[in-house]
Image (tube, rainbow, N blue to C red; front, side):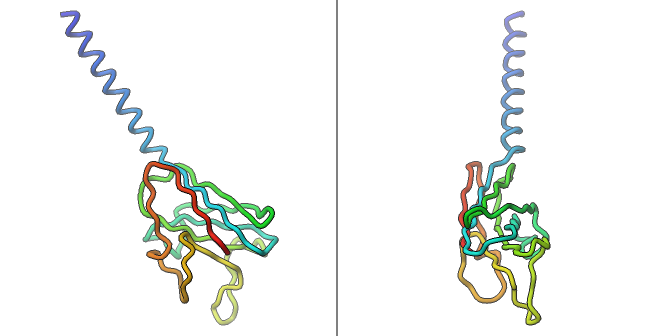
Length: 142
C-alpha cells in the first residue's frame, strides 16, 4: 500500500512540476531584438510592436532607444507566439510622435520589419513575421 501511495505521489508531483514548467515557458514568451541602421543623427528611434489589429494604431508595446553611431537597438521581451509587425520612427525632434508635412507626408524617416519598399501607407502583410518559441532578430534600414 505504501508503495502505491508513494508511486501516485511521485507521479502527481512530476505532473505538477511539468505543468508549471510548461506554463512558465508560455507566459514568458520569447524576445524580438530589433536593430535599426540610419544615416541621420539626433533624436531617438521609437519602436512599435503590432499585430494585425493594432497596425498603424497604438502599438501592443512601444519603446524608445538612443541612436549610437548610426544604430539603435531594442529588445521586446516576453512576446507570445503569433504574427507581428514592427514599425520604427526616427523621432528627430524628440516630441514622441511622427511629424507630418502640410501635404500629409511624413517629415521623419520610418521603417518596418521586412524592409518593404512600397508606395502609399504601410500594410501589415508587408511587415508581418511569425514568432514561435525561439528568439527573433530583425534589422530595419531607414
